[in-house]
Length: 144
Image 1 (cartoon, rainbow, N blue to C red):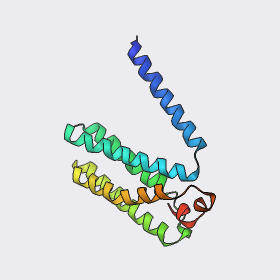
Image 2 (image 1 turned 60 degrees about the vertical axis):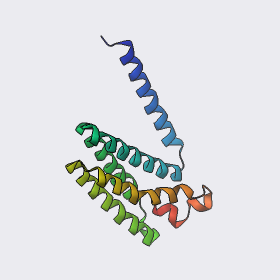
Image 3 (image 1 turned 180 degrees about the vertical axis):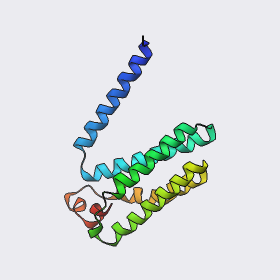
């Protein structure tokens, strides 16, 4: 029989999942990319906390999640016909995926920090883009 705490925790988890799904469905393309960046950084931060704590399972799960978001979300969504920016981002995302995989294999906190430093300017630039129809239709918006 489950405890009241377990039932509340399950309800909270379900509520958060429904909230996220609602946010995704209502989000603009610009906001979706911002959410992907938030997810990557959240996963890297979780892994960075898991390494010194010796939590191998959380480290593995978090870094695998970060790699999937980068590869299947940000990298796969690039419009390579948008120009050199998209090509450069594809290369950056591929490099970061490789480095995060290495960090996962070796439990290397410094490599996670390197990836955070590499992605921070892209995340900040994306956040600085105005959410106007003109900005969202530009080459930079399609490239990211």
